[in-house]
Length: 156
Image (cartoon, rainbow, N blue to C red):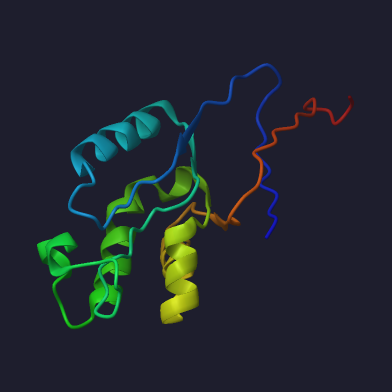
């Protein structure tokens, strides 16, 4: 999957970008306070945010041979486990949605899609894109971040 994200700014103005990867947001070992601190810095500085993959751990489903109930955060111990994770992620990332350009797939999200036939990232991105100013692209499993620049008048 290949997506182009266009970010326009005035000539010579810096673009600050925060690259995040392997957040595993739904795992009890995710340091959400630290993650929120980093995202709040991006919010204050107006940084663009790229999330590179494994946003969701996903090793907590009923039939996942890798997981166990001990790896599930208490708020997700519900009958609608996957819905609660997606809804919780949307709520958590909501204040930053207008800054997020891409959320890409990692091996954990790919595994969920292939084994459980659920695309958690699609659900999360669609939910976040309902927020004013959000235009998050669903990225691929691998790829590049390429920034190209034009002068404001379109020359050069």
